[in-house]
Amino acid sequence: MSLFMTRQPLINRQGKIIATRLRLHATANVSSTAVVDALNQLNDCWPQSERSIFVNFDSIPGDMGFLDWIAPANVTFEIPGTPFVGEHVADFVQALKDAQLSLCYDFDGQAAQAFGSGAQFRFVGFDVKQFSPAQLKVLLAKTQQFGIPVAFNVDSQQEFKACMDAGISAAAGWFVKQPSSTPAKQLNASQAQIVRVLNLVRQNADVKEIEAALKQDVALSYKLLRYINSAGFGLSCEVQSFKHAVTILGYEKLNKWLSLLLVTASKDPMAPTLMHTALTRARLMEQLGHGLVDKSEYDNLFITGAFSMLDLLLGVTMEQALDAMHLPEPIIEALLGNGGIYAPFLSLAFASEAGDAASLAEQAGMLGLTGEQVNRAQLAALTFADTMELG
Image 1 (tube, rainbow, N blue to C red):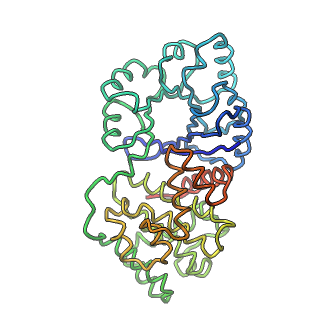
Image 2 (cartoon, helix red, strand yellow):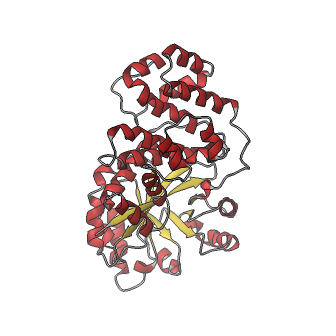
Image 3 (cartoon, rainbow, N blue to C red):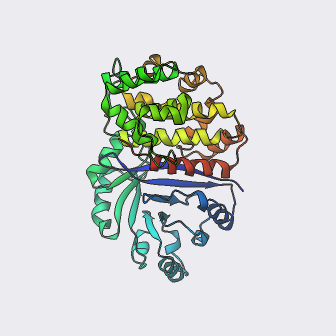
């Protein structure tokens, strides 16, 4: 049995991720027992942040066996109307109450039965592919008393705006991947300064020269030290200066963390979500590379993932973003879609954000990875992105 997860960020009207939505995809005709077993095996690497994780079981058999999952405390179960119709409704509702689960009702044709069953929902979810903005407004007026309204599968900025205008609290989807403005002709001064520092590190310039460049923008030094000392890095002692960072990390590792400064240099309203996504891709690719590429390539896989959204984050074309940087050729090849050794890992990272489970399974198979390996890497990547202090 293969179980794969794809994800969507749940974003509020301020452009911040408030939850992650995981959609489960399993082999055809698999039993819910097998799915629950697979989920229980992932509990040890499940993100422990307070940020909620919605879990969608659409492609899993509808016998409600998922209630046997020993779900982590931050899980919100998405439930359709099907189990609220039939002779075992009372038993099912009692089981939900006994388990004290956080529930999201995925709005469908059985809404009257679901809302009248006595089950308590924290959220009511609407698939925007099923309802027009006008219909959403009407439905929200009728259902707000039953749970906080959220939208799913929002793919465009227009859909996101329509959802917010209708009264939706947050929307899940990848509308953030759409450019919010026409690309600029060049990097702004702050971005250009970060690139300059990055290039100095890659050239193994003298520590004093790099420190001098960093001191031209005090905010850069502050953010760099904050990242290095974050929980995501896991150092046993606090790094107090750039010179100290070089001593502990060395130039190669420092290059990886300086790259985060560029990723977080955006002023885009959706920047927090873009940064979180870039860092999730970065850690995911780094994790997936273990045992498949030489250890010396791990940091480059991380940087490839982190830089995969540079065009959106910096508001320039990818070619312009890369032109000023002296990056290794395999990173440039992957980011420009020209293949290379990092490209399969980047393709898998992209597939983990889509709803096409077949594509994800295919990309994993090309690298010889199992569903469990990919799922573990993705959950670890989410944990990493959650622990980084962004902005």
